[in-house]
Every structure is written in C-alpha cells, then in structure tokens.
Image (cartoon, rainbow, N blue to C red):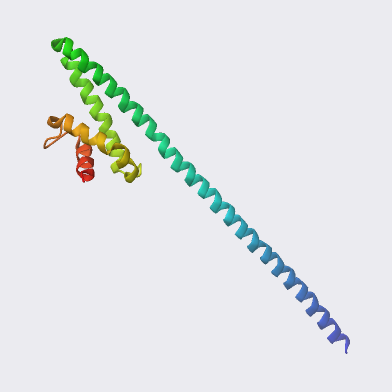
Length: 156
C-alpha cells in the first residue's frame, strides 16, 4: 500500500468515527425528544384533570348562591303572610333574585361548563319544580329563557 492509500484509509476511518458520533448524538437527541414528549403529555393530562376538578369547584358557589337566595325568598314569603302590604315589594325582589341565580346555573349548563348528563341527574327536578311553581314567570318573552330552554330540553 502506498502512503497515499494509507492516508486515505486513515481519513476514511476518521470520517466514519465522526459520522458514528454524529449518529449517536442524533439518536440521543431523539430519545430526549421522546422522553420530553412523554413528560409533556403526562403534564398536560394532569392539567386536564385539575381543570376538570376545578370545574366542579365552580359549581359550589352557584349552589351556595341559589340556596342563599332561595332561603331569603322563603323568609320573605313567610313575612308576606304576616304583613302583605309591607313585604310585597321585598318578596317580588327576592323572587327575581332567586330566579336570576337559577337562570345563571341554566346558562352555565347550556353553555357546556358542566356535563349536562350529570347535571340533569342532579337538577332536573329542581328546574321542573321552579317552572311549575312560578308559571307566570315563564310565558312568551320571559326574562328567564335559559331556564325554560333547559326545562324543555330535559322534559322527557
């Protein structure tokens, strides 16, 4: 073998080592990308679970507000029995506030903030009884269209 051939083989061998090193680095980068993708996927899944849990935590203030307004409305109804002239305006205001809170809940359900199938199990009778208790509030041009829409949707 000539000196030229020996040097060419040495250069080719060094080039091979460089390419093998580059391939090894690319392989390690691929593994790092796969591991990073897996970690990102798991993190997104946990965030999704936290958001799902937070969604249900939002329901609690809706329920508390409705219960508080319903209790106040009930108190006004009791006072109305005792002195109708004095408490009629407060009674009507309490009824409006209560129905507004139910309207907000119905709007949240219809907008998909809560799973409708689960909410139907919990609130179907509540919505139906609200409509039946105050039929004069749910005529054409009602101020509570979402309650009425949810009622009609859930009426099996």
